[in-house]
Image 1 (tube, rainbow, N blue to C red):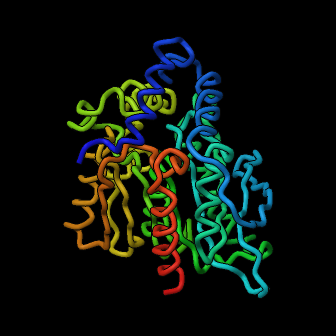
Image 2 (image 1 turned 120 degrees about the vertical axis):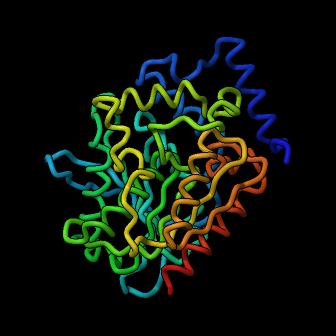
Image 3 (image 1 turned 90 degrees about the horizontal axis):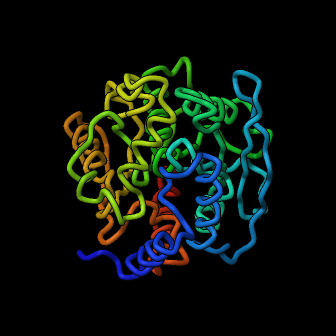
Length: 321
């Protein structure tokens, strides 16, 4: 279908900002400038949803002693029993993104779902190269296993979710848990991948079809990967590009949402086909008329809040099963 008219209008504003010099393509900025622009733009995409949530600030230690920030979102409940949890990792190309940039998305999921949402930070490139982001994500998962109960979280009922490179981290974590359970003894009920990065090594046709003008751009993707990698060969490591991982039979069921107008579309479709051919459980939907990052566009696109309610329902079904 055509590009969603609300997104088309938003993209016209983005283009106007560039023509007037108020904004620049991300890959033409320094990482610090890109982070500031990304966070400022996030304020335009969505507003804080109505509803009462308890939001707890958490500090999670990494393996090298650095402190990772996290937030736990949950609706107030009468019972004191540990709650199922959605562990969420934000997108941003390993270079930008934060707890703040994805705060409203996590709030919407927590308000709609019968589970707590733990949104966790990880260190960014180029200050922290591959595989730091993956190691940090794994340390967060290990913290949930060891410390979650102290915070009312049930580590036996966990879903993993992330968007863009957050989805890449989730796909890699699910692989680690299935391939090396002795290292990561987590058994996620489902992994939710929202327009994820799955193959940083191969450029597919959708990268050219949507190279410019559809929010995420080809040159920005290349810039992200170059800042995160130590060397180009890192892109073939499945912790960077999960499509190259061996496929374990016990991999968590996958819920994959892609965007029709996204340079990452084709690699998402290729990943879904690879899982299907291996006989693994995969539900893949291409969201018509949408671009990359649509799940954060609750203020721009009228359908998005309802889509997130549906997503929370699907996650809740898995966590109750």
